[in-house]
Length: 196
Image (cartoon, rainbow, N blue to C red; front, side, top):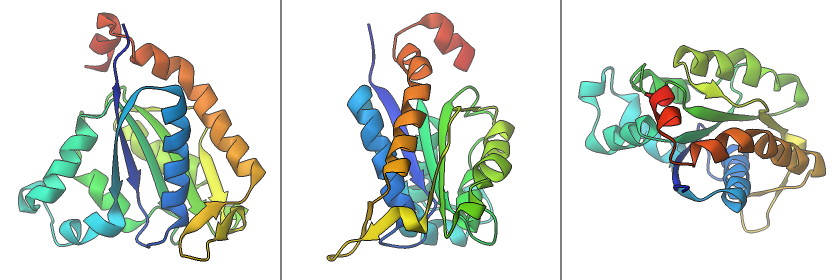
């Protein structure tokens, strides 16, 4: 018997509209076509002010603590960040500084990023994978990177993915993740024990 997985999607973008959030939502939409999911999206553009002035989890307002608890209780994470100064955004890292260091053990994480050009694509392997390896999370095999040229600005504001190659990369990332995620969706005590 399969269960609905709790997916938490985190956008590290501080802008609205945002190419990063557009990419994140496209990945989530592709996952929703393949799996039964309970989706919650966290956008740092909205949450950031509640995080920025806090130096410890005890200082955080309840709204921020609630979002962190959602991350810690997720069955699956999709995370995306724009590249700032060759790294993830500071508030993205600050958010995960508050996440309990043993709460993401064996949790699958699909990694994504956006940047001005292709030269920033290695941020996925050089910044995001090490961060989630610290948490002993399971970073999924294929990350998704989109450059500025992969998006079109919409007349009414916002962005749309304009690149066939980026859509193909999203499909590939989801396809490669599916065997593990489908197994996770089955009520299997040995899988649950491995994640504990």
